[in-house]
Image 1 (cartoon, each protein chain N blue to C red):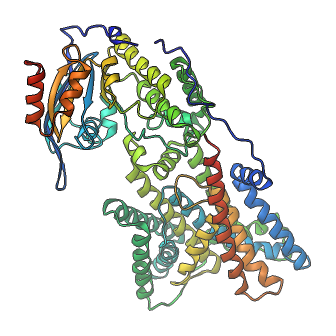
Image 2 (cartoon, rainbow over the protein chains, first blue to last red):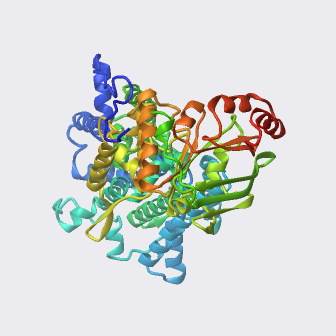
Length: 357
Length: 275
């Protein structure tokens, strides 16, 4: 039989069923434009808070606070997304968030090591911890949930025992602090002046690094193999993808990102608190990732969605307080949002695969 | 398609692959015991046997996914050791696994080139050349006569038959010397089966590719295969040429009993000198 003779595969080939109900149409739209749909949620939230606060929410001062939180959370959330795509998770990121800047500050006050060098060492520590997490998970086949909970307590124990849980006042070195998070913004400054920009540096760093991750994910072999690892690990291995390495590398990225976020946090407050990153921070980052449209099932995820999700979480945390609600109320909304986002995410996936014949 | 379609394998066709005394255990489970198989250039070898006979383990050793406990693999005259599927692919051995090894969340064209992506330099960065991969995949599927709605659609949206065609197309894209197909026809309808069998025939005739085929439908064995190796309980119980045996004989041998000795005895009784 000549191979040029075309075959029609199966009966009716891939007939895409026309959606009938409004709900189905809406879900299909959501599955196609996940980032857009979470962006809509974010905009609605902004409008709600803006109206509720009589215009205070979008003031430069308040936005600076919200976007700083967004940046810190977004960096961790985006790194978590990379891991979630490979089918793993890292709960030790908050401890890395604490230990990296603590080492930086300690090196600075004890040995006079410049902050920039200390920051580099801090990030390398984060990457190293990630590598250890990855190796334990992959080589010893310990579920990453357990590996990283162990690592969380281990690191947290180390960082509080170094100096009896005492925060270290980190020295201020310019331009390091201004570049990596300290706000020099005064109400008298123009928003687009040099000082005005420092009001948003953590957010700008997050945007840049998240865009880099988005590029890596969609335009490089590394990203392709990351998705393949989480989507079908046995198949990927059979075709020659080094799935173990892909997981370890993504743990290293996550560790590096968490360390960097911690350093930004310390540069902002000029203090390294051994308990700066509570485990709650990691959970909020995972919430941001889930709200942003990444499921825990592996094989798919969006880092840009995670950043928008981080904005939603940060807006809820700060906005509800601003419109006069109790600080604790925001957790009620956050909890509901996580569950709703997950239900939606799974429904959208199910609908998507049901459409095939 | 019928048996006459097979041109006789030339007597002096060189041996391209020799797996000798391959044994493999997984913990307490013995999967293979001293299995030896030989493959000549342009030959289509059928591996048959019941579930758990060791067929899949044998080909996963050949493809570098598993490593044998003992035994040697000689490919193109030199001894090789495959630490990973990449090593086997580098030696020109392509495998289509039973599970097809397709990534559901990736597009058809990304799946086609997974593990051997095309790149382009952009601002000093090594980025995926998606356009080239998309075009090449489309072109290649067209020449093979495989129709799918779009090379952009993700694989989890395709039917079983379409996925199987993609997996086979991917394995022959790199012009392998040895092609291993683990139940390539399992999910295919009659026309699609005929099409894949046609592809195999073409490969062996035009490019002298050697093929190892794991297949359950004995009818199909006689359509395309030169030789049959029957695996039973981790051993090769029968090695026969399709020209010397018939479908009925094969089925009688397979049904005859349990244990290598019983099979050999049955084979000897049915046709003396076969084994």
